[in-house]
Image (tube, rainbow, N blue to C red; front, side):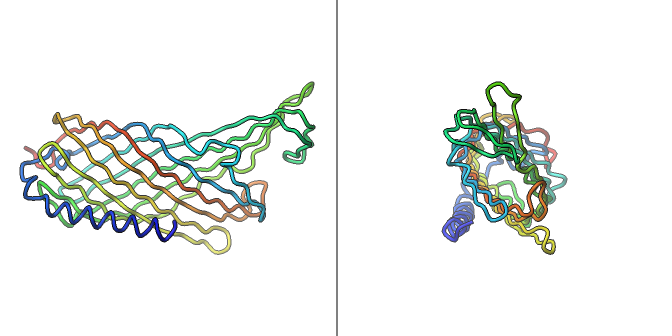
Length: 278
């Protein structure tokens, strides 16, 4: 994550907290968003994508051949175990592929592909996270706390070719999933009985000798309208960046991956139960 992006994220969470404190008096009437025992948010995520992979010191920029935007689904959930403890989870995946006719001789997995063949490339990514949070501040209008958890990043890329008169060939460049511990701060603030804002930023890194090194930064900011007790609508902006260096990854000696996904999320909320029991 660049210094500018990190500074912008920190400033955003600070401003969000400051505005929350100023708005707490106005949001004195209970907003159901802060009282849900369970809540599921699912919707459409449209991220801008920047991915690069270095295999044995040879760098590949996937946006040179793949679209740098993708429309995909995303889901997030919340379980307030008690008044102070909560469990957050989320998942999204983006699969991209592209085919083109080769104008020159290529080599895929040790197989020589003649010019004029159709070559395809895929790059599939997924991100899942779960975290246990504790709210230091908890009222009918404000929830502020810290969470610790685990993020799972999945990466898979394949190259393939269709050669006239011969069977198709394919080659898995890499297919890796790796977990990273995370720690984050979150804030939910009621602006009125029907409007609320939410923000979270988390980050962590992990190093396991010379075999694995990785970092992840995850942030989200959203505004939600709750016209009905159990149903709401929201608009969020999500940011996720990660990098990992893996030794002996599949057919490669060393794999170095960097990615950045950021974009809007339009979602529907379904909430159930009440923490307050009211």
